[in-house]
Length: 216
Image 1: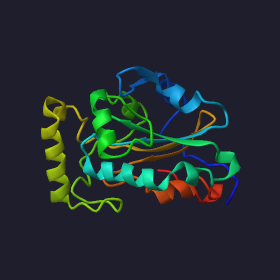
Image 2: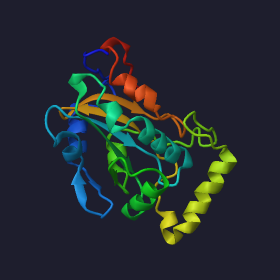
Image 3: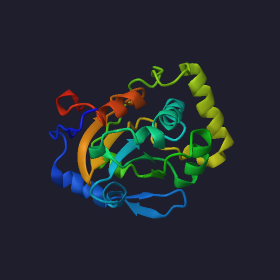
Image 4: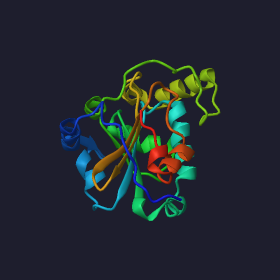
């Protein structure tokens, strides 16, 4: 494993824009506000934080993705990454109502802390995309066909009653961001609904040489 640091293409995001994002608040599952900067920079200079921005809380593809991450990016596995990237933590951020965080954990995993920004301001600030591209294209991290995913999506919404309308913006895309010592080291913004980086890819980014890391 390599001990070189990550790199990032900052052409789409200025330092000022990033600092403004740090001041934005997300919500815990209890609805309590938490400053984004505290999540990625408030636990010491040596902590590596992998932030997964998911799509709406009823996206079945993303639910499969979070389950896959929970199975592969375990505490034991994260202990095997190079010393320069340890300790590492993973957090999930969504864009639906905070009351859906608990049900989302039930559908996926409670391994990672989950927060949300129903306004999606932080998504906008970090310039993540809004598009319907790929919504009917099953990703490699999901075994669901599009009809099956759509059926499960609607079933979960029906189960949650009026809260089923508060899962988040259907066209909001997320991405994967890696912060180290409070500084942004890597960013991948989804191009469409089936474009999360796989767990293997994320772990590879935490271990490979700097010149092998490519950013989007």
